[in-house]
Amino acid sequence: MINSIKSMLSKLIQNRIVHHILFWMLSFYTLLQFFALQEDISKIDVVYTGLFHISLVFGVYVNVLLLIPNLLKREKYVLHAIGFVGLWLAVAYLNEFTFEHLSDWIAPDYFFISSYEINELLKFSIVYLGLSTLLKLSKSWFRIIEAEKKLVELKQKQSETELLALKSNIHPHFLFNNLNSLYALARKKSDETPKYILQLSDLMRYMIYESNDQYVELEKEINYITNYLELQKLRCKNKTRIQYMIEGELGAQKIAPFLMIPFIENSFKHGGLNQLERDVIDLMIRIENDQLEMNLKNSIPQQSRKEIDPIGGFGIENVKSRLESLYPNKHELHLSKQEDEFTVALKIDLNHEPRH
Image (tube, rainbow, N blue to C red; front, side, top):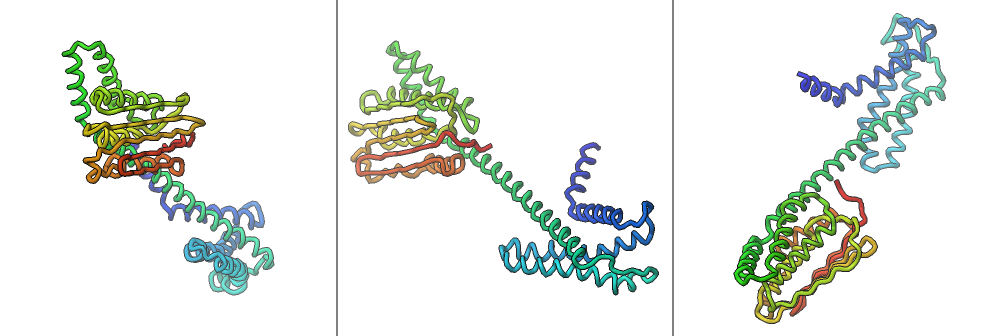
């Protein structure tokens, strides 16, 4: 019952007709008090106030329904200025005409004359036309603000959807292959087995539980990347030269998750895991003055150079979309493919206003 009442009141408050009725009721009350000759409101005061509103109503709705939508909103500023001045004068003269001629026809039982000079009527006219313009524009402004909020919400939902899609696209073979590698280490009773199990556990925990927010601690993202690389070293053994370096202070910086890992995965997919020759993967991540810079390069096996196009793919396109959404004008991304090498250069400004 209470919810239905709230819903009804909400619809009533948002109803445009109600807004207009309330506006003119307030206007009528204010001018009635202003025009009243005595403290007690008489019938003649009510009639006079009603007649006075004829020109004001005319001016307000010509402004709101014709001038603003057809000229001002279409950026025809000169024509709007001319029309506004013309309407301003027309309202004042219509008021004078109302009391000199129309009042005899509308209220024949009363004798009225225009109580105000043109210069005074022009003041009434400009107040109502100016007020109606401001109210109309402020309403449009609130609509723009509301539309922008909805756009931000849609972009956030899009970013969340893209993140989920990206996480679901992280290759399950990576997990199975690492479990096989760990199984082989366990059979050999290697002392490194617990270390790699812990790294895999940390990696999976981050993927499943700790990377669900739009922004995560940069330190956790970097730890995820280093765990990933160490586990890939275990898989590749000595057939691929994997080297990486992390420079700078991580501090309390935050970053959107999984912006760098698709490029790193890509380097293994098209380079490090081919193991057709001596492969190279070289990664540098530097954090300095709130700027994150990643430079990545991997060799392209000669036997696969014609077939491989590492620049595209779902993961890479997904990251590009997320970068545009979360770091507009706050990032740089350059991808380059040479005959025997693929490089990625990514820069992100971490000191920006997060989008919520």
